[in-house]
Length: 88
Image (tube, rainbow, N blue to C red; front, side):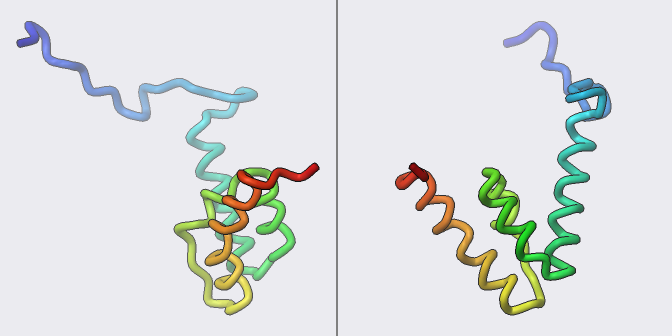
């Protein structure tokens, strides 16, 4: 039994930053950008997102555009393919 219970730390107390910008802000900005690309059917940027190793950010997203929806649905197979068959 602990004499002092563990302290809960809120995200407001965590001061992690990259280039002076808080990490949480960067993540949120990136997710907003991804949703904007989906909304505007910007397949080129979504493809680049996967190639840059951020495919995991697309997996839970959905789209009204059939082409974008099909791409998002196929993202896990691209991620596996890149893992097992890296570009030479």
